[in-house]
Each structure stands twice: as C-alpha cells, then as structure tokens.
Length: 85
Image (cartoon, rainbow, N blue to C red; front, side, top):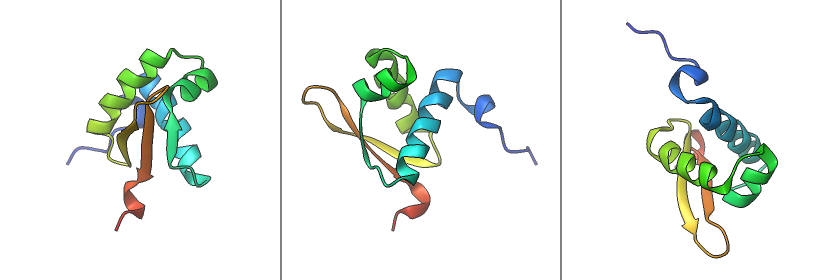
C-alpha cells in the first residue's frame, strides 16, 4: 500500500502556500476569500492565485473550494470537507 503523500509531494510550492493560507483562514471561521487579498498577503499575482485556486478546487481532498463571485475580484468560498454535512 502506498504511503500518503506530503503536502509538497501532492501540490507545488505556490499551491501549498495558498492551501496553508486557506486552512488558517477556515480554522479562524473564514469562508470567503478574495483572490486579490490572498495574492497581496502571499506576495503572488492575482492571476497566479486564481489559476492555482482553480486547480486546487479540482484536486484538494481537504477543502471544498469553489468560485463564488466575480465582482471586483474573484471571491472563493472555502469550507473544510470534514465539516460538511
């Protein structure tokens, strides 16, 4: 049986940074995140964040990530998959 992959084996460095940011935000009660603010906080471009969030929305097993709104900057809704009913 294969051993579980570490976060850096499963995701690239940028995705791991974004995922850490989202997990911290969700643990503090956050659910909605704007790409431009994630970019600013992590020193990335908004395009980098948006591209990687789209990828994470497909492959992340720990968080449910979905586009929520497109006004002004894309807003993403993020919830922990373990907390869903």
